[in-house]
Figure 1 (cartoon, rainbow, N blue to C red):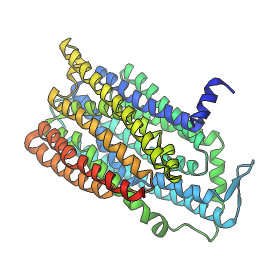
Figure 2 (figure 1 turned 135 degrees about the horizontal axis):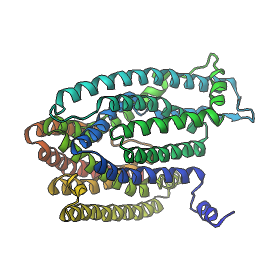
Figure 3 (figure 1 turned 180 degrees about the vertical axis):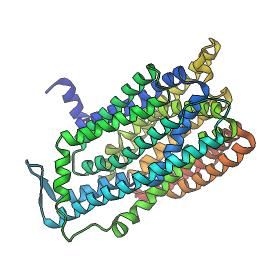
Figure 4 (figure 1 turned 90 degrees about the vertical axis):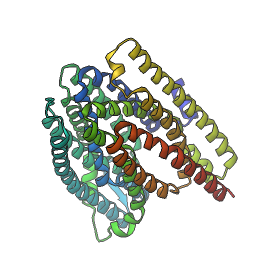
Length: 449
C-alpha cells in the first residue's frame, strides 16, 4: 500500500470520498476559472444572457423536488437485503427484489415524463422572457444556445436519478468516479469551446458532451445490464409513492423550492428591470462568491460522516470540539478568499483591466461578500443539526424564501440593483442569522440531554 493510501485510510478517505472531494474542487475551482472565459470572450450583454440562462434553468428544482437524494435512501434500504452476483443479478428474497424493481420503474417513468415536460416549459419560458425583456437594439444570438441548454438540462434531469439509484445499490465509488469524469469533461469542453469562439453555445455543447459521457459510462461499464435485470424482477410487491415516499419528500421539496426564491431570482429580475449588462454583473459576482462558498463549505461537508458518527455514539463533547475547529477553519478560508477576491477586483479596476468592470459596483459587491460569510456560518449550523437526522430549518427556509422573493420583486422594481442587494442583505442579517442561532441553541440543548 502506498504512503498516500495509508494516510488516506487513517483519516477515512476511501476511493468514494476521494473522488467526491475532487469533484467538489473541480466544481468550485472550475466555476471560478470559467469567470475568466466568460468575461474574456463574451460581451457585457452576452454575459447577462449567460447568467440569466442559468437562473431560469434552475426552475428544474420544481420538477426534481429533492427526489434524487431520497431515491438513494430508499434504494439502499431494499438493496441491503440483496446481494449482487458475478453475473450482475441481485439474489435474495423476492419481496425486496420486487420492491427494488418497482422503485426503478417509478424512477424511469416519473423522470422520463417530467424531463419532457421540463424541456417544453423551459423552451416556452425562455423564449417568452428573453423576447419580452431582451434589448432589441443589441444583437445577441441566444435562441439556439437556449434550445440546446434546455435539452441538456432535461437529459441531466433524467440521468441524475439513475446515478442516485446506483448510489443506493452500494456503487458509491463508481458513481463518484462517473461524476468526477463528467465534471472534468464539462469544464475541459467548456474552456475549449469558449477559446474557439462558440460563445453562448459553449455551456450548452459542453453540457451535452458531459451528459453523453455519463450515458456511455453507464452503458459500457455493465451498469445497464444491472438495470435490465432489476427491471425484470417485478412481482406483486411494489413501493407505494404516496404512502412511503411523499410524506418524507415534501419537506425536502419545500426547502429546495424556497432555495430557488432565495438565490435564483436576482438575475431574471435585474435582466427585466435594468438590462442584460447589470444582470451579467450580478451573475458573475454571484458565481465567484458561490465558488468561494463552495470551497469553504468543503471543510464542513466532508465532516458530515464524522459528525453523524459522534452523534450516534452520543459523544457530544467530541462532536462540539470537532465542529468548532472545523467552523473556525472554514470561516478563515472563506474570509481570506473574500479579501483576495475584493483585492483582485480593486486592483483590476486600478489597472484598467476589463475583467474588473464586469463585476458589481463596490458597495453591492462588499455587501454580498459579507452575506457570503454569514451564509457560510448559517450553513455550518444547519449541517450540524441535520446530522441528527432532523430538519429544523424547514419553516425558516419557507419564510426566507417568501421574504426574499417579495423583497427582490418589489425593491428590484422600485430601486433596481441597490434595492435587491440591500433588501437581501437586511433579511439575512436581521432575520436569517438570529433565527438560525436560536434554532441551533434550542435544538442542541433539547437533543443533547
